[in-house]
Length: 412
Image 1 (cartoon, rainbow, N blue to C red):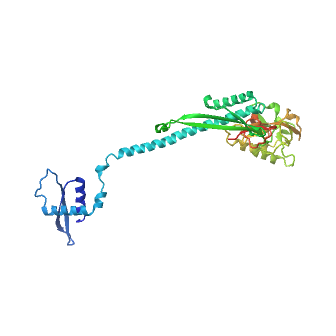
Image 2: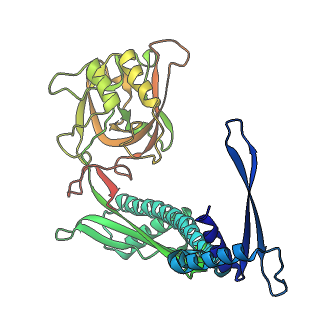
Image 3: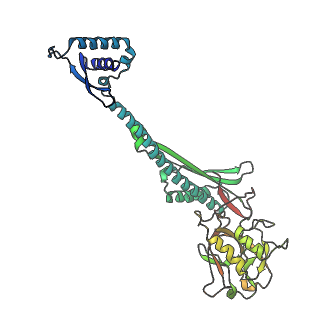
């Protein structure tokens, strides 16, 4: 107790700036059953002010002793006195701290909101210029495969600009198209570059002095010859194709009486055809190539006879159970594939194992399989004709030669 009293007195003396007196009175109490006495501490506290008078209530001896001890304690332990918090000097600290935190929070809000806004705009613009570049390439594919003439460049520009505008790019945001060749020395593989820019108005970052952010995107498409890949083992006749119309890719028993049901045998050379290969090529597609580019050449392929209900139904149902594709002509999608286009004829003219002539390739989307309620064996596979393979679509293999099966893809 003798140790703590000076500490308390010294602290109160410093904080209050006045003389402090503590009167301590120990009084004995009744004895406990074990014979020991108990004691009780009575302490009183008094603070002196200029208006108070020194009365008899402060025992001089104890007051002097306590005050003297407190003074000695205060002088001999300055490190405690210096480190004691002075609450009077802490006023006004919260306001600048809160202001600083609000500034930091505002910065994080700008980072999350405005960066997300810029990213969203960039992604939308990138998709638009991607489609515009492919549209320009498609215009080039359907014409002379060269953009040397001003009229061809204007037609390509109009086609690309129309697609870009339809997908959210304003006319003033679209930059002039760039025409070049991937193989500059031989002037092969034409490329078309579409670029656009936009100033995006920022929200929270404007408070920090950043009013807008310029977003610029570009896409380049290239044209080249394709090697056929991703072929389904069916054949459609040239005169039956209608854009965006659903056609039969494989018919059932009641639709043909000659033993052929629109199926093709791609394994003629190694004699490994049959139901097993047919089923494999439906599920995984055929990745071989004809002996010469088609077109302008043709490719003779034998038919696969037999209805093959089970080998058709199982892989087709597996493919139909897969998610639909976002870009309709990307033949990397399991439900999108190339189908050989046969010379104009009717399948009823083809009897038994016969040769049919492939003159082109078409991109189909697999849509449905049913038997029309007529029972097993009358199964029909249907798909939608999207475009010819030389149109815009997924491309994996390129040659510099611009004859035969052509396609376009994005370089970046």
